[in-house]
Image (cartoon, rainbow, N blue to C red; front, side):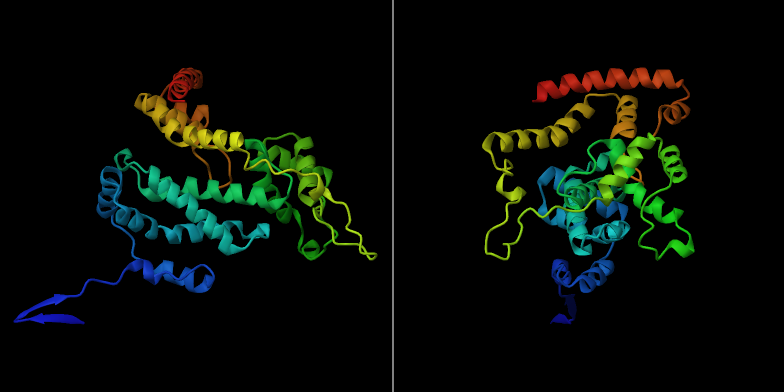
Length: 311
């Protein structure tokens, strides 16, 4: 469709691309729509990122988010085995994507897709851990790695004959040793995690008994401190330190120190594990692993001081 003005023809501007994305309630339509959204070229991505950073251009932020919605869908499919709705996983991943867009620095020399993967996975991981059990099953970095690998490794141990055997849920001693060796954790930790993952859920609010009496359950004595004012203030302060504070502390480091800290502590691999090891970084810079460790210690001290000043 076009507008005629004499001999000149001016095409109408395309419709708002946001209107092309249906709500997540219709999951198939949503996925089909986001897969048809156009990708940004490196030049368009750089221009949009600078417009957002320099001018707080929300339209530019929208273009960056929309062009990466298909990435969230692809990553979320990796976590369908945890019994949580695909739509919810996508929604949480989209939150991570928006956080990545907000913090993306176009001058770092990396594409947004590489930067956003960490934020998308981190948000989905947090959602899974919060919803897998009422009591958290993984609190440390090593436990998280074990949690996100144990389920798939257990399936790999099953033979074809055992695949449909619902009674074959526990690991043998040999399998526990193999898991512990491959993930570099203690066998006791493997056994504890398997117990946590296979444990039954507790009904917080039991249904009334046959005589009409309300059964006593954990809901009667569990308090919700999530909205306590002091806790909310502390939570906001932690969020600020974890985002803007970390970014400010990283900016105080030289390029080599910053990369070492980022590779060691801020990168997450596909299996949920951390980034490069001391020996891998030593090979990159042509120095000893001990020298990399010394640089890392000095950088962490400098960042700690910077964070204290920021707070």
